[in-house]
Amino acid sequence: MSDENVEPEGVEPEVVEETPAEPEAVEETPAVPAESEPEAEVVVDPAVIAEADVEYIEVDETPREKPAIPGADLIPDIVVSEADQFLDAEARAAAEAEAEERARAELGDEPEFEARPIADAAIDLAAGARYTATGKRKTAVARVILKPGTGTYLINGKTLEQFFPRPTLQRIIRTPLETVGFEARMDVVARMHGGGVSAQAGALRHGISKALLEADPNLRGELKKRGFLTRDPRVKERKKAGLKKARKRPQFSKR
Image 1: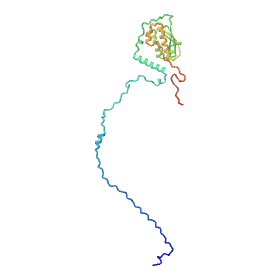
Image 2: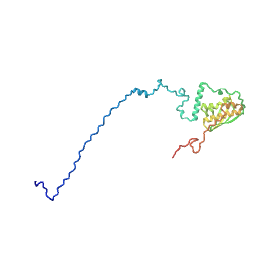
Image 3: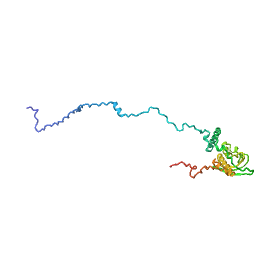
């Protein structure tokens, strides 16, 4: 035996620690699924689907007619001009009345009761006969005196044409005497105050009609039928406390 392999006595042999070897990484291959058998495709005719789903709707091939507008065939008889847009209600009503009078004069269409005066009017036309009455319209008041004469009108010291230049108002005032047939045999003297020109004309006609009734009470039926004795009750409504006018209220404010 050689001396190299003999260990001396009393010396412990060295222990060599062995490190465990690391396991080698094994690559896992994914499992390939088994090939399944392909399903059989169902073929459907698209024409059959279209016929089953589509509902047949009958379509009227005739062209659609435009509906007629109600009143489209009517011709407007009142056309407001630019000058009439800024007139008040009274002036506009007087202008419309004048237009109607002109159209009526052109056609020669006069009302039947105005064209035929009352024949059986019996009024005393003595030299000192005086028939007085008071007519009213809105806030206008007319104190009228009828007396025998030649058919002249004196209103507040002026003639009829000077006090009422508008022909429509002149015609309104003359209608009571023309109705009874005394337009050329009686004079009218009147004192007026209050109201506007249209209201004063209505008050004067009302006063003349009431004076004719004083002269002959039998004229009441004819004058009443023509509306000469009816006092127009339409007046401006008074202002109320808390309101801007008769009915107009201030704008509401929540805060």
